[in-house]
Length: 227
Image (cartoon, rainbow, N blue to C red; front, side, top):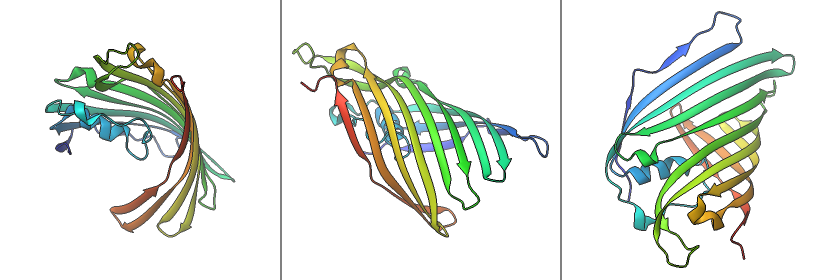
């Protein structure tokens, strides 16, 4: 079951171009979306390969939440540094999703990232990500034993590091690791989890606008309800 999505770039795309030689830059962007299923729209975003793909998937019994419009926003401030060892950059970024009808799905996240690219084109990156009170949808709670339907929310905090290598022209390998926590609302607190992940990403640029991406994630988590 795949939601229909139509993306219309809003008039918010604006990059503040710094004067020549300046190190600061900022970018804002807005995209207006239409989806045939509000629950699947957010699930597709949060489970994307470069987001949090090992987060528990949405129970298909609770999909079909109806069509909606979504305003997707992004704001980023960046600082770059040049040296004989390459170029470093620090980014502070915030993303938001505003649902017009299904407002419970509206959410936002913030991330700070430091990245250094060596002259050899090897890149090292460290990133911290925080996404509070993300509504996953309605689900069956099992803490009381009555299996009542309740709203499920999760707050995710993740720290990640990766090293990216250019193996050949258009072929990049990224090896990454991350550590994080997921904290659920009271009805689903047995799912509270501390986890770590390791794995590779491979990107192959087939055409100027076409890239084939492959990834493997090995993750181990320790949940509060493990007993």
